[in-house]
Image (tube, rainbow, N blue to C red; front, top):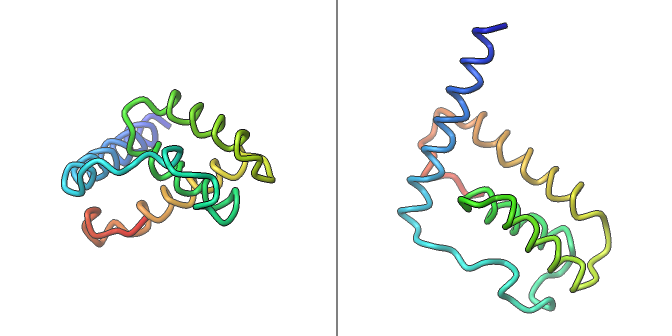
Length: 108
């Protein structure tokens, strides 16, 4: 059990380091809530973009709160928490499964 904890922690550290380096190389992306509501075709599209942005953001809790507020303001349909949790899980799964490729070349 202890070995699994250390292994999990090591994977998280490696993923965070890879995301940090990709973030530094690509520059600072624009926050999804700085766009107009019409620029998103659906709430799912906004939730996916905001999950991607907030995963790279240092203050994830505040970032997710801003995204949820914008989701409600735009009156998108669906449950933001469920949609964004599913998007984050998919992104982390892609990162974990693609450990053979360098992280900076991934298209999230």
